[in-house]
Length: 318
Image 1: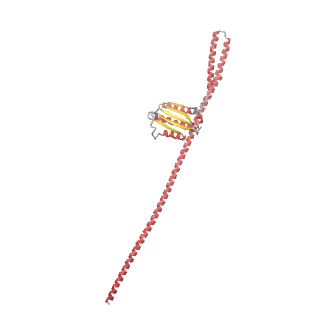
Image 2: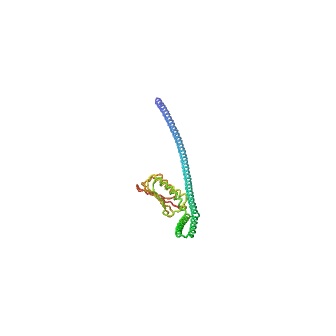
Image 3: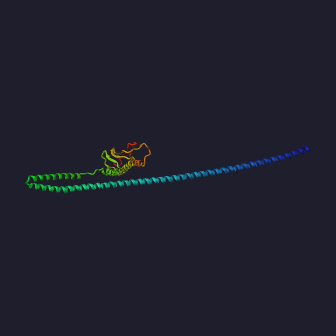
């Protein structure tokens, strides 16, 4: 009985230990399940937040790209509008220059026409008025001389008659010379250029020469080329006046294989033509030469003067 009682007590203790152990295990399992659930929740929350942030960043990038594209588009449109304005301004300026040059040519042509009409008027006056009067006087003296009997009077009459004949010949030659005078076809452009250079020469006290090495028919060259050429020479003269302190300027024209060559030479102080940065004057010249699809070169040395050589093709203007 005592043994049975002892075994019963041991079994009771074992049952209690088992129950306690089982409760402990269940408690640990519940704790682990709670911890896993918490980790799972936190993981899901992190994943959702990451997705949200990723979506937000993608939206920010897309919106930023769209705004950048819109800004670039606006910038391109503004640049294009500015270019169009510049092109319109240059076109209007070109038309204005051509109109100015055309007016100058018309004015010069009217002046030349007036001079020619005046020459014809003087020629007619000489031929129809003075010459006829002198002829009548000579005839009258000849009739008088035929009636004279004194030798000395006849000699005097003969002297006066010969003198009047000499005057007749001089007036006739002058009349023919005036009537046969033809206008030089290149006089308009060269005259305008000479007027400008001559005024600058008087203002700034330098000598000048304008030379044509061959015959150039300026009337066959269109106004656009002549206007830009006139502006180029203007700019070159102004540069020489401002910077070169030259005593003389030579402008030489020649024509070779349908290409117009212009050399503008001064004896000023010169400059280092190897420098890349030139002034706005040379930049303007370069721009105008480029518009004419031409070329230009500058040769200059300190204290040795400057030569500006231009080549302008005339295939579009002839």
